[in-house]
Image (tube, rainbow, N blue to C red; front, side, top):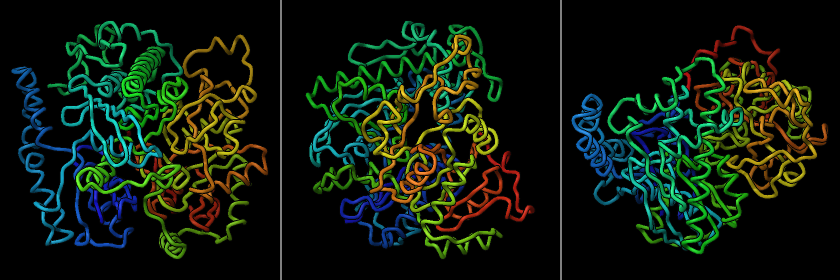
Length: 610
């Protein structure tokens, strides 16, 4: 049985394909169109999934859309009516789009799907899931648990912003919900907007900024913005927010509460923004902890699955893990809306069609390596067509050359195997660096990624050595858990260094791996497993043999505002548009000094800033 899942028309559209319950392929549309957070119908992602599965659309049994647009329209309409006449300008802007496109989504999907298969029968073959059910399905069904409590937390689906479900076998039932406008995700997005970052893409910047500040405003948030109950349920005071009917997240009352208007994008960051970030992060973590504790207590189930955009808050996830209320946690690596495509397919297969579930361990996601891969001949063809100069090496020689270059503090573009599904590069489409270098963090941020200097980088570490280097002794294959660097690898700070504030803290090497040690000694860890990514594991093993360090800096292969690279040609363009010194694509090794200088690109300003 072949099930295609689709998410689209909001942001991060994607497609996923199940074949007899097995996840065969999944990808975001942005990777193909090169438009960040592309929300359009995922035609190219669908074409890839069909090709990866070796089938045509005519052979697909069901297509499942990830939410119910009529329920979403109901929420939009009821919200505007509840606040009328306030918000008429926003209403006037939203309605034409809904009336032209989203309200008649079934007809739109029919025309798009029949472009792939003229005989596609919408009435018989097209199903609609619900937004949070799709999230919950994406979290439970691929998890390694026979039974689990499932928490989904995001901005908003149709009406739901937070849900609690219980999964057993091939069944999944939502038991509790919190509804719009009360939303943990939208509270976080309000502070994303207020601190000058872009909503729906800059939330992770707020999380990265938080360790530079103190949670000075946390009590103000709890006193005025959110009524957080002991069981984690909550209500927001909507007098401070404008997202129901306005064109911004916050309003004048919010600004008065915190003493200033919102920071303008790209303005210099001050200690105030860092303290605001620390404050909303602290409140979010407390809400996550309370929700998990109460869910485990209410159900008696100690296995917890997480999905929804808030589940990408890896600092909060780390706190949940260390809290111990949940015996085991598993987080969907594509926790945001892109993962809704996978969840929709899984919900259609198991819940609608009542197909059996086979639990897989460590999980059913295949390491999240679900995107396109390229044969060596195709890699060489694309690189030659682009004018690249490269050397073809055998596996051992490639790993040796790359490890040596990394040990000499060169930045390495690493393009191997299948592309990752979800927002994190996990050693398929990555930029790698030496974590021992005190300069690597700033070099990668400013000269390679062209992004804000405060943003931290993640360590990729051999799974078998994670406990030696970090205060974590378990799996974290998807870079979704934060833990501290092990005390044995930390460096003591002087009294003067301990008095530093804000970005000044960056200048102090805090451990033996300063490029991946955040200012609070934390790190967003990826454990690398030989079973799911043998080549990346081999590179780390070789680097460890040379340096005695089984850790590498791992960041996504792109520049700020660009989707992660998908094809060998994408990788070469990014290589030539940045100061990456080495590029490994399949078994091809490229050195920057050997390339035609006329091919160098001005990549820094090529993409809209995120």
